[in-house]
Length: 374
Image 1: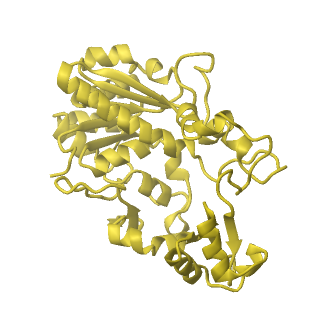
Image 2 (image 1 turned 180 degrees about the horizontal axis):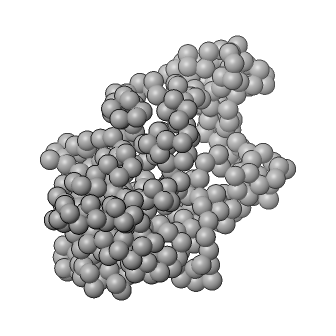
């Protein structure tokens, strides 16, 4: 039995910040029903890479598949009042509702906190946004890179003297879901003790500020690049082969002496250039020097430690075919996780509406014919 079996989640979130949190819950046994619409596709379904280059296929995105493992998908047109009424039925079934729309959207479609409490008094609403729902930026709309700019990450990233540099992906969409997952589990624990639901909220800016909080005490006047105030050397250095690198960090004279004993005196970038990155890293680590090869995507997928941990799980997806999907990065002996494929768009309409909500088949067909289930 998985840890969260029996937990029911109505997932209205999209793209990354919400879906990454509900993925972890789904992989650990929660029944997550993802609410979508063919009329307004989740941007994750439009994000590359695509299986067989099928950009127009809403089920072909590897990004979406990795971010939404183990879930079910229903299609509801939330712009239609009948769709909003159908969504409320799903809320009445759920323990947790998750959303990451712009502030005010849930209220406009009749699914704000006050209304959810009427439908399901014990429900937990979990919201994530760029800047939160109170304060001077309460109406701000943006994405993970907006949080990178607001939180200081962009300013301190890049080489000394260079312009601000955005992280290569929406880092806020990765950090915020970790905090949202903790908030959801805490709210569930509180409800177990008090019987009361609650509204929990996470912004992206705050978690991103949280992970670099120690730097605020003494923000350097110039970007440090790969340099570190305590370790020297501290950086990445070229190795033999095309675009091959090794990361090296020394914290004391003993480690620096071991490094020099193996490579000799001189410019470290020149001393490493003729070595195989993986072989050199293994030798340096054996000598007590912190060193690691810089892995590209292929090498990461072949990482022996990740393979031994079972981190990449073979999952058969109806469009992508057999695919390696990331599993939860924790192991629980008594309640192991199980990773299933991401759902195709609307694949579980009948299962959810008829099986979970007890709706009549004729009503489901009528709503589908009227563009409500769409």
